[in-house]
Image 1 (cartoon, protein in one colour):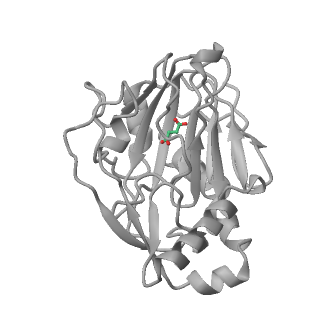
Image 2 (image 1 turned 90 degrees about the vertical axis):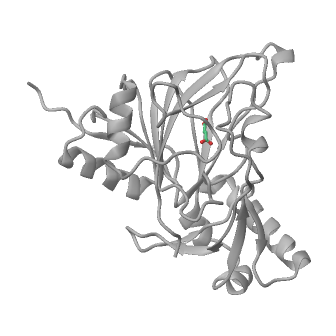
Image 3 (image 1 turned 30 degrees about the vertical axis):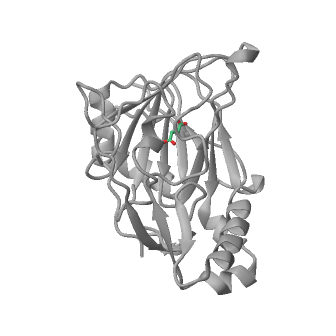
Length: 280
Ligand code: SIN
């Protein structure tokens, strides 16, 4: 049998690579090491035409660590580890439609996410990722000096935020709101690199700073994080898989569906998250 050759195509100068010649059905230690090395290098990696079953997606996720349960959203009936993200054709809203790092309000935010496309519209619904290691490196020195040893409060905003705006997303009955403090600059536990760990959706305030000053600095940081030269954008096709390192990227699912303009399409994705550790 001919040996498959790995191919790496970079999505942008900032981060992201589309990988060919690797099967995600192969969960051997050697294949997992290859995938994890690619993930640490590119921060988000994409694979097309990976017809993996839910069981195979769960097995793949388990290679990275224990699978995480979402605090608000119900998993699939037969596969509780998997959240099915559904945007119905007549909806404009889409789950994940603003800049965020998944569940950064948890004491131990997600390590990585494996997202597989089930149904993709003919146009729209791309996902954009931004490199938070590069965001730290390129941040204005005055801001760096003000925040480098500080923590910020991340809040979940409650269950309503995760299910009420999205017709087909079902809550698990938990309505509590969670808040946790994390260092604004965290160190990646595997690479030792510094990462700007705040995000527009969940980060609310810099600890120990007046609200006005905190709002002003966070606004400047959020604008910096969305700089286009720090990002890459992925155009989905059916049976594509994205794996992102949730510790070192922020992401944004673009809701460019305008049903009134004839752009009412369905989009369906299966998401599995892997438990992370306490940011340091
Ligand atoms: C998410 O934010 O976890 C979902 C991203 C997407 O659907 O593209």
